[in-house]
Amino acid sequence: MHNINKIKFSTIYNKLKSEPVININPKYINHMHGSLNLYRNRLSHKSNKNYLIRILNYRGFILNNDDVRKIYDFKKSNTCKKIKNYIENSKHPKRSRWYQELTEQLIESGSAHYKNQHFSSQTEIDEFFNVYVNSLYSSMLTTGYNVALQKEYPKCFIDGDGKIIKCQHGNHRFVFAKLLGVSSFPLQIIAVHEDWYIRNIGTTIDLEKLGLAFHDIMKKHN
Figure 1 (cartoon, rainbow, N blue to C red):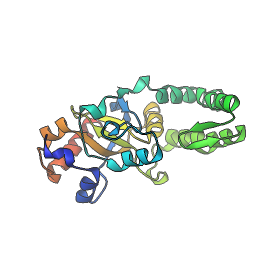
Figure 2: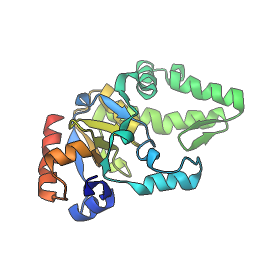
Figure 3: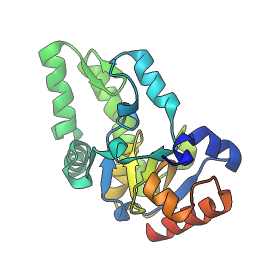
Figure 4: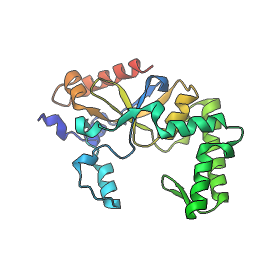
């Protein structure tokens, strides 16, 4: 096993003194990965808060094949299907699959949820669509991705062949941008596959090579 497997994201971040962020064209990214699946196989399988916190804190920078077994085609994702349907019904959002699914959840169980947000009334669902979904769609459609409005960058990793795989949070923003033809979208690289790293960087941390390799990745996705 190469010693690169012990490299953590925090080590790269501290050495670079900035987040490894690249601006890409979403149309050149065709695969995604589950939000919290990275590194899951390396930790105990307890579904509790501490487990999820440890996943997020682990943040190893080097991935192996076991870490990236759940890559799927962008077009087949439920997120893509849901947002594509929303865009088709943008003039009447309440007809969208997204809105109707939340409403059905509310009727069947007395509450609905989106990520960590919980809705206990139809009014709360309406507010969520007005404040978040509709405004995100309008903003992305008219001005593209606005970095100033976001708390942090959407994430991605580099697979063994040097392709960008969208992962972690920011998937909805990314899908909106891709479907609406936004040409510039920032992604923070949180990890790379060991095969790509060894082929392009070697078996040690070389920031100059890493910076050049990231620049080459960005050019290939624009």
